[in-house]
Length: 294
Image (cartoon, rainbow, N blue to C red):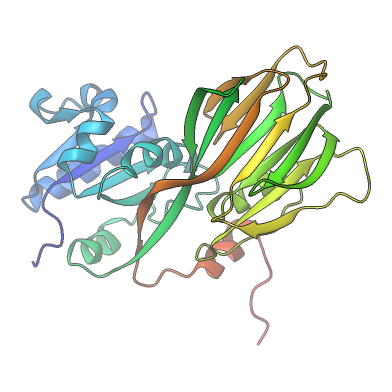
């Protein structure tokens, strides 16, 4: 068998019986084929693998050239924010709910994985966003997001006042529950639930989706992804706590008067799909769209 990859990393959700079962099956399958296999430290102990093969996410990015993530899109997002910094291919096995980013099924992974290992796959690059909070001209905190960056109050049903600038051009001021800045990858996630458009993965675009705006005229807008988005929170905002959420996993504290700068991150996620992958087939199956009538 011709090998497209040398060292393979396994990543999964800790303390999840179904995920551990799939990780064990993948581990045994790959070892039988003769591949060196590294396992994320958090799950290595649960699988009982050799401790010498356990690594953290950064080490996996440095040492592996293929990472297989077992779980849902949330697990993929967490791994992607780290692995995108390295030239490592990422493939997903779905153990979650929708699984827009995880193509393989835990029951039938062997055949499509065999094709990938032989070099028969599609490669897709997904860009990430970097969001930074600035206070009095000083950068206070920053993180990255594959799906979306969300400015929101720390409690439910509390409006905030903010202004939006695109490349330092004022777009509008808004009173709303917040705003979602979503990548094409994130357009089928939180932004979709808020009424945003679906963006196909190859688009170099961002969608800005206001959350419950206090005006009927405010609608989502799609902009060039090479633009810089600046959100300025009103210094008079009365919110006790404001947060900037990256993929729903990382929350950065925001104060009234802060500026948030959002732009493309310098690195991209290298995502692999089986040869027969179709994005529109994924949409039909995950969103229960109508099938062909003729």
